[in-house]
Length: 161
Image (cartoon, rainbow, N blue to C red; front, side):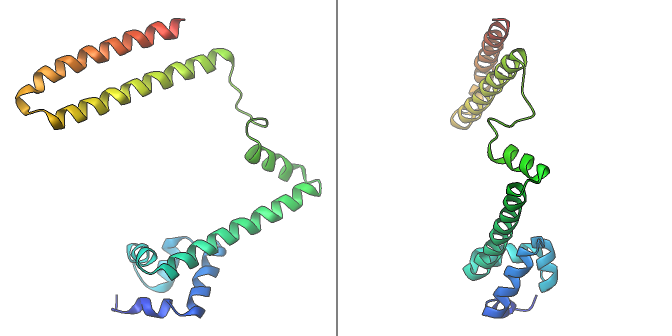
């Protein structure tokens, strides 16, 4: 990459081009290829040179708004597919195909509680390991193993209730 190549892309006409590419649905990889740079370089430019980052963001948002507007118009004109799509994505609590039975809901809740407990235990173990010396690792493992067993016992009790 030639030094200073980014300067060309800070010119207003090139910022409009970047925005247009993003609005037309090009990925950052495709845009980097069009410019003749590596994708990581484009990522750095987006952070370092705000005009480039904003052009790509505005282009993406403009495309989203344009598609949203057309979808809404189709839905309002009676296009059933557009109506279903709109409602499922904008009124999820009411129009959701994945209704769970009460039993499935309880099972999902129990699994989430177990996952949360396991996560808290893992985080506590990681924090404790960082704070304690290597000599006390065996003691810590014993304590944490007991906590894990208790959490599993509690999870088993909750899922049977």
